[in-house]
Image 1 (cartoon, rainbow over the protein chains, first blue to last red):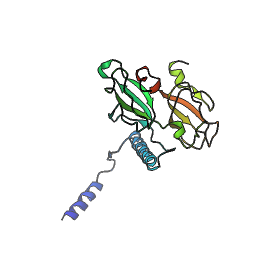
Image 2 (image 1 turned 90 degrees about the horizontal axis):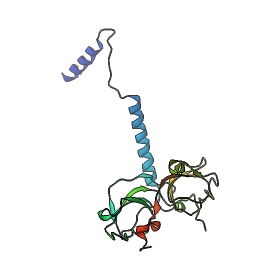
Image 3 (image 1 turned 120 degrees about the horizontal axis):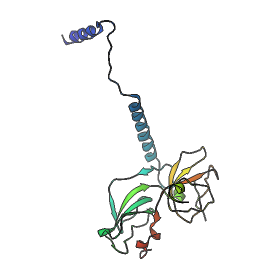
Image 4 (image 1 turned 120 degrees about the vertical axis):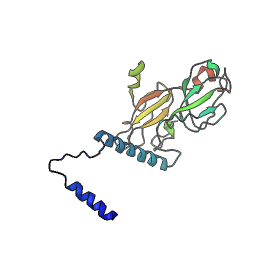
Length: 135
Length: 75
């Protein structure tokens, strides 16, 4: 019987001679810490996303490298730093700050062939509920 | 201030913002550090909760697009 077979093998493993050293598979402590901190970060990220928009104090910060490019004329969805990629390398890529609500502008040289790539989001300071707009 | 030492400069409310970019905002006790975009020429603001105890450190500088020589026609 299968049940008896399991019981037998379990019993048999307990019959090992004294002094036998077993090596149980385990993860090293630093790997466990990595898993814990990864979970914490994920939970924290979810907590940020659950909060409302607008004058928010819970922004999901960080680097963004989703590879999505924006063209001139498209609206800026998120305030932050964008990498500007010019056409035909008339200029090397550079970074600019853009405010949400504006539109990505055309380049004076390569016009609407310029592309923008989101590098890092960060809300404008005066969109944060802890900071009042200055006059 | 030049190079890396500039990134370590700590600013307080009322100081003029020297460079546009993303700043790390350090509050006093009530909230964890967070990032914010702040533009050159503005004044660092005080916090509604921790007042003038809030501090700002430049995390990543970047030019405001309107200040860039290649984007003057649309501005």
